[in-house]
Figure 1: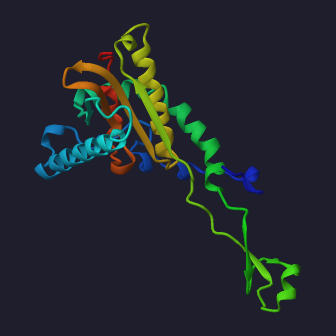
Figure 2: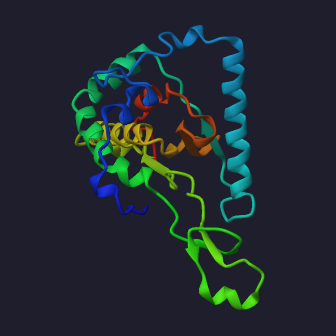
Figure 3: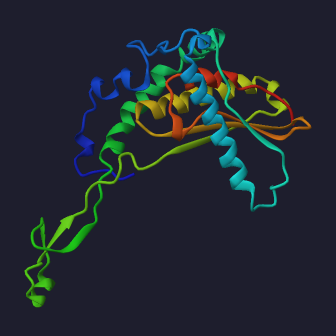
Length: 234
């Protein structure tokens, strides 16, 4: 991330962190996008099944040429219910003011992620290259390259879902941390991937992976799936 020359004087208005971009209400509380998951259309259910199959194919392909190729791995796509929605709202209440303040302070840096590189040998541009005059081809200028995708970063978060997470309040602490990171990324338009993992749930699953949020299928309801994080097995 690069800070532009005038970013120190930039001011981010309330509109720049509008709650609509993250599916939040004006008070920072999550909006309900699907009150009853069971009412999802057949087409929606089929898309979820197809996405889960894709994740499993991708996972098997990743390990096919590794020392883990004999591991029985299954990728799950957890669902959510009204209880998960209520839990999310409860955990979210004290966090959102902090998350919004952090986003407000960092957005100027993300929005001014502008390249400082110049492309040489141009017929016109903002910078004159005196040493190019010798070539007599009229390409005497350099032009600033266009900005990179803003923000030029993504976030991946891995959650430990082993049985030990049930002790000492670790599970709720993990959920709060996940909520904070997820909502911050939503406010700043940063793609985020959140996966959990455990092992030895059954003889069919030596390795179990739980896809809560993914780059390839961003869903405003992923925030409620996060409440399916549990202390499971090994």
